[in-house]
Length: 422
Image (cartoon, rainbow, N blue to C red; front, top):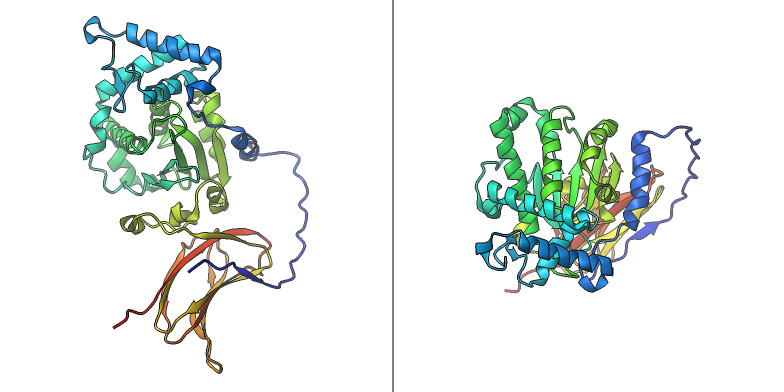
């Protein structure tokens, strides 16, 4: 069945009061405004050599020559030099994508790009990065919680989520970061997560050649994780150039200015130009701009649950907005007797009333309250429910935002299964 369009009950919206302009802006406010301005202007490389300037094409050829000349004489023409399973000097077009990442990271300065590439090759060999994806590093409790790959953005980029709030628990922190050896093992695990994301990339001109990073700063211990965070940033920037198309920070707290002052020296201007900053309360609204709701985890105002991954690609959701002072009714008509309707619905930052009722077609029938009206708290996840109708009729799912002036993003999806024929 096709998704219906939400119908809005007529509500008189109250005029919002204008807030007096502040004479001073906080660091986070300034950074958010800067990120908002930068984000649309950032354009990801296509990696088509024909799209490069002549000087950039020459830099690519010079880098290949420099890399070939730096190989031991007994390695032939250097075809054996590889990264992520891609021969860097054998004429493979995927190699151009890899080499251009290093050149772009060093503003097409060939000598600097070559030095970075050689250091990365040495690091990968010493770190044994090529086989890390299949290692069991013993961090089962962190998978799906601290760092994990989940779904894709609207442009097809794999999305990596990072959330370090669990480390506010002192026992957890000591268990993971208690000494240098534990920290090294955690860094290795974090590289493993990134390598899994990279394995989904195309490394092809015009293809998907980078990932999206979403970092949740809620409850993140700022002092305790300073060493680990600095090492992760340094390691990634030195060895994974241009692998992140966009870096989205969510649940940004007031102390982000201090964190940023620590991270900033380790970030290039190009890296910082990819930042998107979202304060607490705007998570779903921010993520929906880049990621479809069915791919956004439920804890961030989306519809994606870990168990969904077992059933193949997620069913697409319909998006809509709930204006301030508005009630939206989603009507699913044509439900046959004994059919079962299953639905998911979420409103970013809820803080409104939700209900669901079934309206039979037969005259004189009573409306059935499937879910009585209830106030949804801002932290509640998506509703998932099912109802089997005894009679033919329609389902009406409602979200009532009449008590609020704030516009909110929302999404829903449903499926109707007819009763089996005997």
